[in-house]
Amino acid sequence: MYRLRTPEGIALDLHALVDERYRDRGDFTATPVDHAGVKGLLVTDSLARDSTEWSGVLSDLTGIDVRVASRTASGLLLVRTQRAVYAVTYGMGHHMIDPLRLDLGFGLQFALRSLDQHSISLVRRHFMDARGRTDENSATRGGELRDLGTEWIGSIVSKITGTAVDLPLTHVSDGRHTLRVSCTDSSITLPLGRTPQQFLGDLRVIEDTCDRPAPLPGLESLARVRSLRRRGRTTLVRGLDSQLDQRLGDPHASGLTLSPPSECAPHTADARAVRLMYGSRTIQVDDLDIDDVRRLVRDRSEEHRLRALKDMRIQLFADAECTDPLGAPVPGHRWITAEVRSGAAYHFYWQGSWYEVGAEFLQALRDDVTELLSRPSGVVLPHWPVGERTDEAWFNEQAAKQPGYDLFDRKTVRTGTFRGGGLEICDVLGPEGQLIMVKKADKGTSGLSHLFTQARAAVETLRYDSEVREKFLARVAELRPNQPPEEILATPTVVLAIRLKYGVPLTADSLFAFAQVALLQTAVALQGMGARVRIITIRA
Image 1 (tube, rainbow, N blue to C red):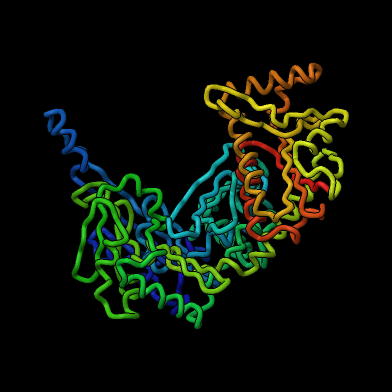
Image 2: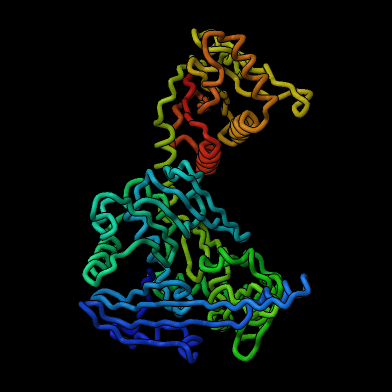
């Protein structure tokens, strides 16, 4: 299901919402619908091909005349309500929607107000930098966002899948089913009622859910990057558009790259050709590059290049002859990723819209750091008085004198990989097998990067290097013959013990912003490897 943009008003001719490529075809049929309260337009299409593109390949390889026909069916139901126009698609019906009509906030707006924070099974995110990086994490049984290694700092979520809660939809009305929902930035995939009454009831539930004022608990982090989409053509947006326009005309401009739109991302690996179409000009390339896009628009006059990019269409094909499309042509500006810095603000152009990173950023950072610092560690460490011994080795020895603690500082594990100085797994082993790592940051928090690197290296090596793991567990068994050493690594707990200057408490206020970011990124990485993370202050 999609929600469509109708600036003309919802009473417009629904035929205008269908991509013109389909309206001009002879096998296209459009039938007005007014049935039991469902009002709209039903569009169907069936594309037949006498022989598939790969039939010729098999013929060449085998010497046998291979002719396998194919038929692609598409269904599209456009439905008006009092609030909006929606498109419900079947088969390849999503290709028939004019891509300029997609409401690009609809899917995530619904997801953030309906999904159970404890049952997220997939998250796709795009990092807000000029490299256009994308990653996708999934979990078979589902879990929290944190379990999937989702990093909210400087990234946009474009797809999320999970179980919806407290939605009275037809599918769960019998009490026997759960409601699995998959949302992209522009679409919702979920089971809908099959009768007109059930369908309209489900549609009202979806609309009411989207109208809720705020995301559900646990999903707020996905809404921290603010879209400027609904801000209109403000002075800010006009200025950002102007800077992007200038970069499109400069072949040497930095901070500009390509990132496939969400509807094209699943097909990029299968694409064998890409076609760029602008007016009467067409360029076909094997592998799309930012210079290919610039070449079509850079000769336009200043302040007209971005407009030209919006008029351009880019389409992926599964074959070099461009006879097997992998989706509809998508406006060129939705392929562009750009970053613009202006003072303290950081703006990012992605999927045809501007986003702002910085608004409420520090508060969001503070909230997450405060939550991380509040987690109980089960570890007690002695004070480290100001003016006494200043080296970490001395403090580790004092900590290990406590009952239930063991010294591992400078007791490195040496293997064929870690020769010479070896690898130090932790400084002190806690009473419940906690891997305690100690760092004094008297000269500021920049020195904490070594601590964070040590923690990630230790957990990663214990997880993937069997020789290191065996030698570490053997040493634990020697020290603690009554404690099964395997329990320590089943779900390891990493305790980062930090002494700031003068022994001041560790809080969001006592850490610089960049140290907070590094701390959260370390916690996310460790949690993604199955470790629990705890932070404690070493007081003076």
